[in-house]
Image (cartoon, rainbow, N blue to C red; front, side):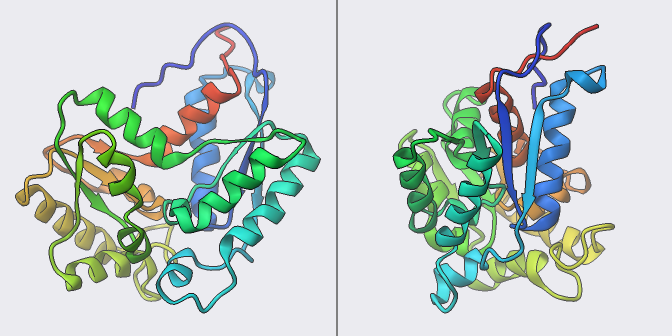
Length: 260
């Protein structure tokens, strides 16, 4: 993505990250924020607080089965902690958590809070970047969890921009993508460093299948898949929501880097 947040000044606000959804995704978002800041001294980096909260229930499990606590309730508890710290803007580095059934509760709570903490919506930011980057795009392929497919969060947001979202065609194909994230033997949630080759192979295969369906771009629609970005090669543009979110957070706090 375009690393454009480079001006001679400092951060005007404090960034918060709700981590643990999954754990490495929060770390990766923090790393990307620092990378895109272009800071050249310790003092020039933005102020960031990463709260890794493993107690947030699995978002896909909630959406598919409703047999765990509503993740939004736990996310709101973390928002209160961020408010106490003094965070100005925050993000949740989990695509599935942005399903309306979950994230609308969090967004509404933030609007009602006297602290006026601002939530940056990763899916809306991604949709804006896609349509601004590829003018006239009509079809984009999505690699994601079963929960994200089920909630159709990307379809709902991109439909407003006249873009259709393609999913892997068969139930088995969608389950294979989900397994590349969740499988205890090779899934990225279980093995993140290094990522298991089988997970990479599944994602490459299913991404290529989306291209055959007519996808003009690919969305890495799970923050665990973002961790595998450098191992995947496609003949169309690839959009990493975690990269897009990092830049959106820097813009949200009016961050500009010290060029000294």
